[in-house]
Image 1 (tube, rainbow, N blue to C red):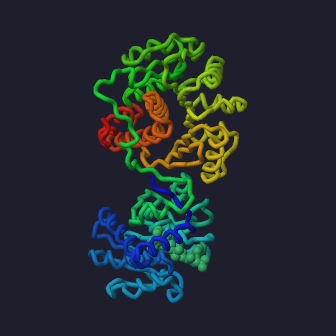
Image 2: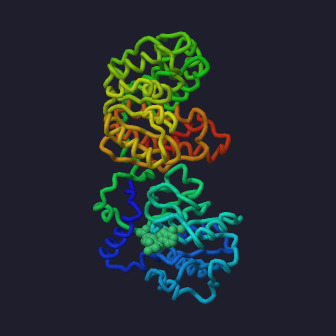
Image 3: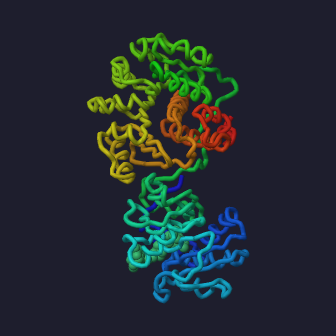
Length: 494
Ligand SMILES: NC(=O)C1=CN([C@@H]2O[C@H](COP(=O)(O)OP(=O)(O)OC[C@H]3O[C@@H](n4cnc5c(N)ncnc54)[C@H](OP(=O)(O)O)[C@@H]3O)[C@@H](O)[C@H]2O)[C@H](O)CC1
Ligand SMILES: [K+]
C-alpha cells in the first residue's frame, strides 16, 4: 500500500531520499521526466505537436526535462515559459541550460498552440489561488481544444485541500510516486481527468518517518490477503451466510448480493426475504436457500443466527416496521461479522441511539448520500467527508466503506485506504448490492475484517473494470458479479 503524503512533505521526502541515496535532485527530476515520457509515448502519436507550459519551480523543471526528452524521441515540441526564469529553482535553471536549441522556447503568450498541451506550471508547490498572468494562462488553456496533460498536479489545484479559483482542466494527470490527496476527491475529477500514478523509485522505507494514516491501494500483494483452502475443504468451510433484504418491486437487489456472494465463493447462502420474494429467488438462483419469510411484501420476523458465519443486510430492504425491527435486533443481538448497506444504513441514520451497538465486526457501506443520512452532517467537500468518516469509525469502533470513485475505507484505528480499482461503468443500479454480497462472503469465509474489506472492495472494482471493458456503457451489475471469478484468476487466487 502506498502512503499518501501532503504536498509539504514531498519536499522533505525528496531531500531525505536524495541524501540517503547519494544522488542529486536533478537526477530525481530526470527520473520523473523519464517516467512521464515513457507513459506519454504510449498515449500520444508522434505526429501530434506538443506545447509544454512551464512555470519556474520544479514542476516547470520537470516540464523542461520532458520537452528535451520528447524532442529526443522525435516529437515536435514548443515550450511556453511563465514567470521569471532567472529566479527559477536551481533544477529548473539547469534544465533550461540543457534544452536543445531545436526546441522552440517562448514566453507563454507567444507559444504556438499544440495539439497536445502539457501543463507544468505548478505542482505541489502551489500555495495560493492563481492570479494575474497565471490565471489568464490557465483560462486560455482551458478554452482550447487539445489533449491536456498535467505533470504531477493540474496547475492551480492545492495538493491537500479544495480547489479555489481557476484550475487547469486536464484529460490526464500523471502524478509522481503517489497520488496527491486532492486528486482523489470526486469534485476534483473535472480537473484531474484520468489519474495515472507513476513510481519514480522512492523506496517505501523513506516514507516510514512520515506519520500519514492515509494510503492508496492498487492491489499490491492482493493474493497474500486471501485465505487458501485445502483440497479436502467442504462447503461448510466456505462459510454459511445470511443475506437479508428485498421488498416488493426490489427483489433484484438481494438477488444480486446473493449471486455475488456465491461467485465470491460462499459455501451456503441463506436469504431472508419477504414472502413475495421466495419464488423469485428460488427460481432465479437455484443455489440459494430461502429462510422462512417474516412479512408479505417487506422483510419481517426474526433472524436465527445460530451457526451463521456472517450476515449482510440492507439491499432492497425498505424501511417498513419489520425491517426496522430486524436491523435493531441484528445490532443488539448478533456479535458476528455484519455488513450493513442501503436501507439498513438509512434505518440506522433514523435511530442514532443505536450507533452505540456498532462494533469491530461491523462494516457499513454507504454511498455519499447514505453517509450524510448516517452522520446527519452534510459534508462540505471530500476532505471534510474524509475527516467525518475517520472520526465516525474511531468513535464507534466499526469499519466504513464510503463508496464512489476511489472508494474510501476507514478502519477504527484511524487508518484510511483509497481503493484504486473501478470504472465509470460501475455507476449503475445494483453495483452496491454486489459489493454487499462480496463482503459478506469473504467475512463468512473467515477472513479478518481488514482483509475481507480490502479484498472485497478491490475485487469489486476490478470485476467492474473487466465488465466495463467488455460492455462499456451497457454494463449491468450482473455483469460485474459474473467477472468476480475472472478477477480471482487474474490475481492467481484459486
Ligand atoms: N518527489 C517528487 O514528487 C518530485 C517532484 N518534482 C516536481 O516538483 C514539483 C514541486 O516543485 P516546487 O518547486 O516545490 O513547486 P512548484 O513548481 O509547484 O511551484 C513553484 C513555486 O511557485 C510559487 N507559487 C505557488 N503558488 C503560486 C501562485 N498561485 N502564483 C504564483 N506563484 C506561486 C511558490 O513559490 P513562492 O515563493 O511564490 O511561494 C512555489 O514554490 C512537484 O509537483 C513535481 O512536479 C521533482 O521534479 C521530482 C521529484
Ligand atoms: K502541473
